[in-house]
Image 1 (cartoon, rainbow, N blue to C red):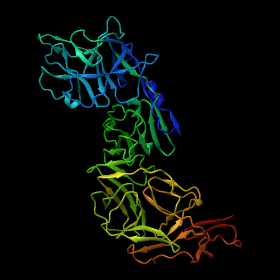
Image 2 (cartoon, rainbow, N blue to C red):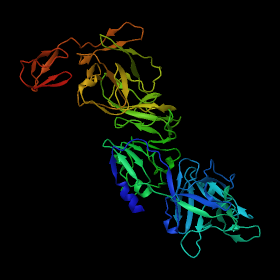
Image 3 (cartoon, rainbow, N blue to C red):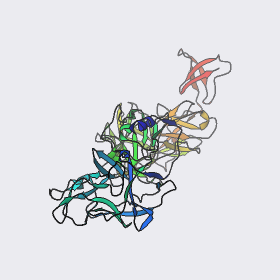
Length: 538
């Protein structure tokens, strides 16, 4: 089985997308040699009073000693004798095998089927206990155990009441004996001293091939059934976003083989309650609860972003108070504006680290596009920094350093990687490549003083703002600043209508052209340089 899973883990399918929802199928185990550590199982049995029905161990909502047995629920078999689970009402267990000892971990509760060896009569309590609850008993005559044993009659084939307590249980007559796990009356599963129960069977999940659906941009989505040794042997340093929400994570104690941890800016999504199954130190982990909700999960670690987060957030999630999210951005020692638009509300801006010196800064908010240019108004220092709203921003005292945009107790928003089509100022949370100049996208130039039409082949980094202007004939747009929304517009930087100098590759000025004009027809073919880039005449 390990070899098969390893081979499947090497399959890389490009372009496999769309959410797949299907039932989990389980078949009956007929030989103890079929039981595998790490595989998934359902405990089931027949009831003497209802021989045509199969009863499975039902799911449970909590752990602890308050629940003395496990309830049963009725499920049909298909024509091949298999059971299909479509919902969360059935308990699914991950098996751990140590020699001849078997332990069943309830995957939904992350807790073990367990029992006490204390004095009992006909039944002893069948419990579901976490690791902490298992260790809580200090009385040597009443310890908890999660170890079971399979006792087969004359052969390795599994027959009635094959699963027994590994530890002896003290009975009311001061004797010790093993108790067998049985479904009783189609109502519950119990640990019985006498043969009063019905037949117990173990059903193993039919493994789906483990699949890594990846793309060239490093977006990794996992499907199928994975074992820890194959899942955590992959080189996650190559990933740019990791989605484990389509699989049930196996318990992993660390990276295996040549496996490598993801980089510190890569975000990982797992199912609710499964973050603890990742190797220790795994960065940027979000647990996803319900994908059909507006807010789909919550961060369980500090979240870190930067320009290298080229794919952006895949799901929306809360960042609980005290957890925090920080986006790092390099700055240069100049006085130009920068565009900043992040998927969460920024609480503070600091130098180098979230605990660093506060950055004294200025912000401009987009107002409108007019015939004169793009109008922004100045914001008050204490105005809220909203999620998904792009701003023009700069430090009051510029320096070559790193700036941290920190948020806490906020919600991170997801966003489709597509551009807006109507005029306005927008933000992008993932890298976007400009394929042609017809997309009407304008970007703030390197000087931070004007917007320039984006050329084909250029790209936008995540956490930036971009302008959409569908008007014709303009290659640059004026930046118009206002001290307040009510002030009359005044132009700080004026470019349109002024001639642009044109230079050759040798640095010699060849002449001038107006913005939006091409190289004059009478000039020779070749490369020309203008203040906003290069132009090629063919």
